[in-house]
Image (cartoon, rainbow, N blue to C red; front, side, top):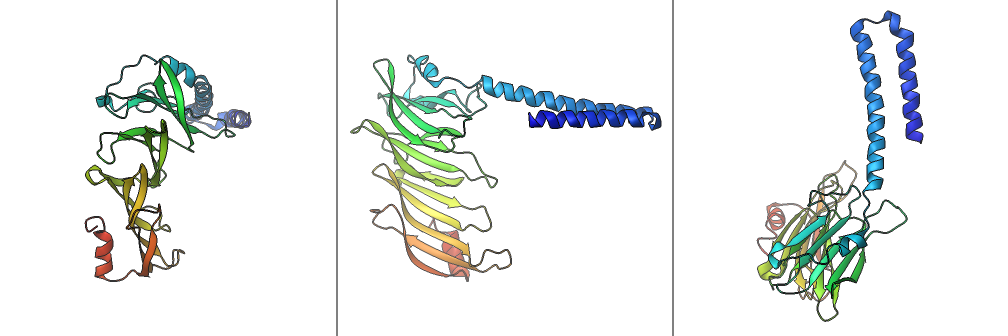
Length: 291
């Protein structure tokens, strides 16, 4: 309503200005003002159409699941979207429904993100298993945002994991969270995650190398993770961080931490020193290659 009122006042002001100055304008100048008025009006119409469209395409997830009870998925298909960013039918509010098999000749799963415009509702990532021609909810996790899902076999054991990928920030970094299926508990388990757009899977050794870089005031970080007992466990980490983050100083610390036994889910600080000299630069630059 406020936007419409502002646009209306702008139109009124523009038209009034046109009328009051018409006698002093050449033909080209008069045409230019009419064009400006038309553009403002068109923008208002476009905005209204977008708002109406967003309201119309919010889909009922249960109906979508029921419509795909007989969907045929092969293990080689990876993740098959029926709603979401990967397919032609893309909803404006980020709803996702996709299907997959995490193991050859095994259960069929539905991966769902029923996003909503309601700020009072916490979005969830939902996981279903198809049992006797019915989709059964087995796990539910809070998630502030999901852009898409991927399938990856992190430890090369023939059982794939589900990766959720968030929306990138201004520096291109985003949340990556990992989920796996527990046959014993018959549910999906949250295995942790990291915030970065630079990472490399090394499934032969159950490892992920993650590098974070972006904001000038946040440490540049390299972390080695191992996938153990369906959890992402940090093994070694190195950080280069400003001593004083005030845009006037350029002195840095280097911090090295490790968790060699992989028993805990966090690393412990080994040393912190001034980041000076060729040796420390090489230690950071070649961290993944040398560990």
